[in-house]
Image 1 (cartoon, rainbow, N blue to C red):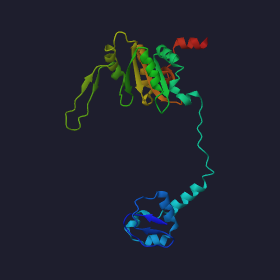
Image 2 (spheres, rainbow, N blue to C red; image 1 turned 90 degrees about the vertical axis):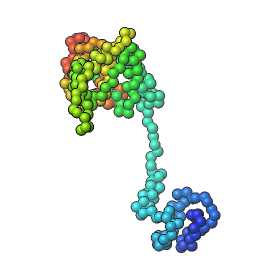
Image 3 (tube, rainbow, N blue to C red; image 1 turned 60 degrees about the vertical axis):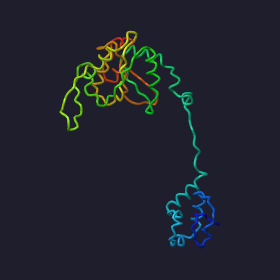
Image 4 (tube, one colour; image 1 turned 120 degrees about the vertical axis):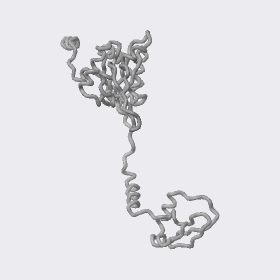
Amino acid sequence: MEVSVGASSVGKMQGGLVVSSAAQTQVQSTASRFALVSSAPRSNLASSNSPSLAFLRLPSERSLRRARSWSASAPQRRPLQVVCGGLGDFIGGDLLGLDLDQWVGDVEKYGSIAVYAPAEGGYEGRYSTRLKSEGYHFMNISARGLGDPEAYLTKVHGVRPAHLGKQTIARWYFPPEVDYRLSLLPKNCKGLVLWVLEAKVLSKSELQFLALLPAIRPNVKVIAECGTWRSFKWRPLKDAAGLPAPQEANADAST
C-alpha cells in the first residue's frame, strides 16, 4: 500500500503504511487518505516530524465517533419526501391568478387595501402588474423612515439633509409627493396607486390616515403591506386600521 506525496521520501512505518518517492503525480482522494491514516498507529504518525506528512494529520476522536455514528444510522434515516398541497405547488401559486378580477374590483371599491403576502416574496408582483394593465401608475415608498405620512404625502414638508459635521445644518422644502405625482400623470391614466412597503411598522393613526387618503385624493389608491401570510390575502385597510365600516357595507352585511 503506497501513498504518493511528491518527490520527498519517508521510510517504512508500522501498520502497513509506506510513503515512497515514486514519480506518481496522481493524488489520492480524501476518503482514501482518511482510511490509510486511520489504519496507521497514532504513535508512529505523531512522532514523525517530516513536512511531507502535513496532510496526514489524524482526526480527533470526536470526529471519528461522529463519522461512525452517521454511517451506522444510514439505514435508519428516513428518505426525503416532498409533499405538494395542490396544483399551485407544481406550477407556482402566482401563475394561477384566479382572483385577479376580484382584486381589481376590491381596489376600486374600497380605495385602500391591506395586503398580506408570503415572506419569500414574488406573489405581489402578479397583482401589481394587473393594476398596471388596468391603467394605474405606481408610486412605491417604504414605511421605514417615512416620518409623518400626512405631511410627506399631502403637504409641503421640510427635509434636513445629513451635514456629516462639515456642512451647515440646512432645511430644504419639497412639494407634496402625492400631489406632485398626480400632476405628472398622463391624461389617459386611470389613477395613482400608492404602494407602501413594510406598513406593519406604522402606528394605527398613520394607517388610518392612509385608509382615508383615497377620500382626500379621489384619484389615489393605497396598497399597504401590513404583514405576511402563507398565501396572498387582502382586506380593506380600514378594517386593519380599526376604523368603523362604512354604512353601505353594514347595510349589505345586514341584508
